Image (cartoon, rainbow over all chains, first blue to last red; front, side, top):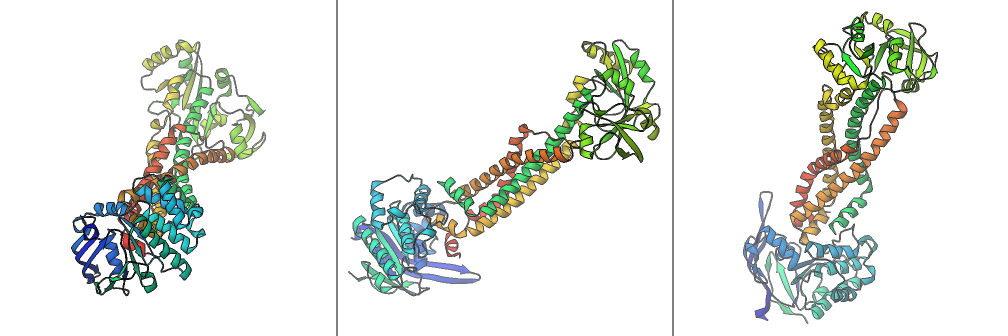
Length: 231
Length: 364
């Protein structure tokens, strides 16, 4: 498995400047994620989970340390390289779904293809994914006409439409009731199991974390526990 | 796809979109109406001058074709002109400004009728007393006049004796002697119209007259028509320039505000697009397309509004103002509107393009 590492993080540090104060959001994170792994990251608020995601997703540059995604060094990347990374290597799923409110579900997915420079054609393979997500019949509705669970499933479809190496899910069930949470988590596990999608998921919820292969705990900007097999 | 997003964004805030389109439309209408008025009124002046039926126009020395000047040509010149080869008739007019762009013209009706064949009257007829006035249909309609109505002009009451068809010389005509007396220009003329024995002799006659009277501006009617242009009216081009400049400022400010609020409102959406891998260029492209679409739709509206403004002018003040529809200016006005709008969208677009994705996603 070590030969197939998708994410390799070593001594990752991130310092934000807030006003005149330096905030040490990450204080030396070490992490390795294999291809096809479903990893849960658990930790209290302010432990650096989201910052780690933002760095892995190329939304913000690291301050120091090494971060390799598919062998690409994020520390050496310019803004334009990180934009490219978001287009091709990483898909995001957010707690608040973050669909574009003016577009239909289908167009929310299509725009991710458009940004990546591809047409949104009726790809039979992707049609299967939409069936798997259970949103094939809801694609022509705008987000306001969809339930939270449906919106999150559309967001998942959007995140994987460009076949990213990694899916980063930040509290994907944080706004959902138990039933919808279970559906979404089940879907993530299916995507992982059937398509081999590498998934990193932030969660507060131990039950949600139980869907992952292993769980990493973060506290005060560091990974504090060894991976634990949960399945 | 990006066009779809742009259109959906515009539909999402219909009031803001409508107001922006309307503002750009008014901007375009301002430009087109001003240019249309300038060209329309100049053309109307040329048409009325041609309508006299003369072949040659002589103005007083040191005066320009367009622009009012006091009568300063000696009336005795009429006899001189009538003795020149090929000149059959001569008639002199006195023109006096009565406020705004309106003038009152004094004529000798007998002389004038010989050249023009006389006015065609819709009501009434010729002068009978020195205080009689002939007005054209537009002036009568605008001021609700009929034969027998009294008009107060130049501190004097005039009786409308005839209402003529428009298109001949002037809208308000009174006896020349009366106007000369009232304006202390007895024996003086503003312009002289000449009717030749044959229009084919016009150039020859103009050349001969210019030799005899080198200080007098002398025009053939054909030349006169071409001289009635925006470029020949002192200050008009600069005035149009100022109005266009103001229009650009208005368009700039409206679009700036509109796009600025749109960008602020869409902070989160811009963050989402960036998280999906949209580059700053993609975001700029989106904002500029939206702006260009607003400006283009606004331009079309502005063009349509010029038909409205023409209708209002024709209905309310047909004698004072003539507005022409100027299709030649449509692309120019639209280009100016798009330019103003793009300038207005510069800062909002730049702000959107450099928006930090993480902050944007945290924006409520």
